[in-house]
Length: 251
Image (cartoon, rainbow, N blue to C red; front, side, top):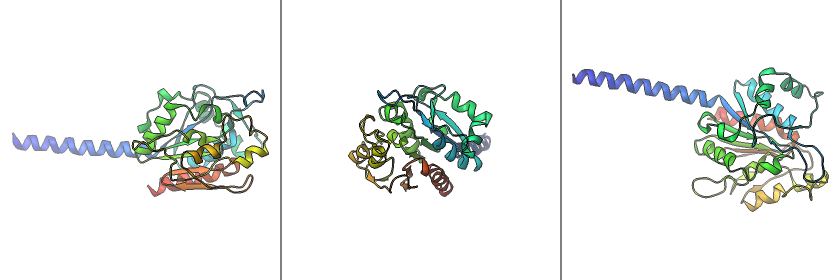
């Protein structure tokens, strides 16, 4: 009887280890992309949304490496799109991919997301992010859980607006003491939206304790520090995807 009990315990243990291994493998193959639901630049009446190239270029890198991408937005459903340029072959490839076009057009709400399924969360930019990323507690909680579980938090351009209010279990802001990059004050001035956006992203990240790094206007600049990866502008989108992939491969 004792031998049978030990045998059953061994079978259970092996099964449990196999299940955990399988769960680990599955988690490593899923990444969550966050896109904005906001469609206007303040009171200007100008349209905005997620910037297509800031989704498509990281998507291409990670999708071709075998990762599955899911999409979430503050409101769920079909998010507004900006920077719609199908002359960009990567944009065209993403837009004409039926599976992923369907996924982004039916983006999840934060309440539908299980953070345990993802090894990385990536906040895509587009000016809309400045209005609905920073104060979305549900998204911040998702990102915090992914990070505390050993995952990666990333963003590009205005996407790091989603990082400004993420807090860890120790009570500190995620960006506190880390090298961070995002759309700069100079770039915001260049597009004449300094007085339109609800806050300046560079300034807010510094307020949260980030060691902000930047290059000149529209230069490709990516920073990776302690599993937080950020890029400055649309020109940095592919490089952010590559940096995420590198970090995933290092894990």
